[in-house]
Length: 292
Image (cartoon, rainbow, N blue to C red; front, top):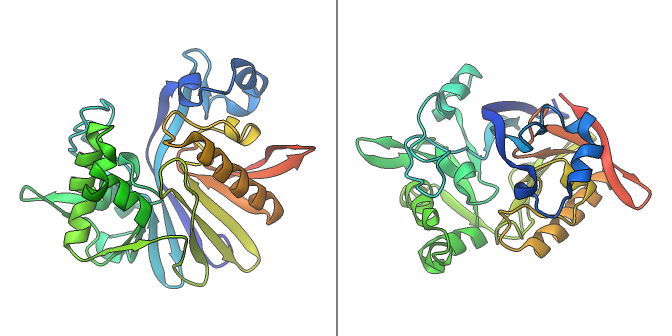
């Protein structure tokens, strides 16, 4: 519980994912080694030098409504540029939500922090060969800047990554077609506890979700952070950031506010407990405590 809001974590998978210095190219090997006690085994596998990441969805029960934050990779998707996500099969998000007591029809709001394939994949599911919304009663909150960039008006991400068009067509366009999509920009209040805020750089519309209830605070930061080493070095962006400089500025701003307002930081891909308190040490930022 964070104040009056119940927070459930539903993990799709957690495993070594990519070379550590490929994921965050500007963080040197000494940073990983110096923080080995914190990073191993839940964030770094030193033997293979691979960063450990999780794919997960956060379920929030707030003000009598059920809110999902990001929806993972999805099932049976064509993702030829990413072998890990391509035609993925197996136990998917709906089954895992069911074990947590959440039925598809119970979901009132779906938040996509940004439009990347590992954050929107279970927006939809296949019904008789067509992609339709997986949560029939939900409003889907989509960052307007991402919808433009990755949609047909932006040339499906400018055609840079072939998968961007596939992602939009199977996971975003059906939500527009059903009338369940709501585009927002800048700030968007969901309820008295939850507010979306733009934090661009990773993608043009990347966002964070702030939570405040009974004096307790948290911020779901999406892909502003891929690894804890970016808390120590917020100037360092991941290899997936479309505008690394802007992403670094957003990261610094969000983390500084988290320190000032004692917000629990909850990234999209952290393994382990998945949430961390951040503190200032001199002119730098550091881990204060990991929260289960």
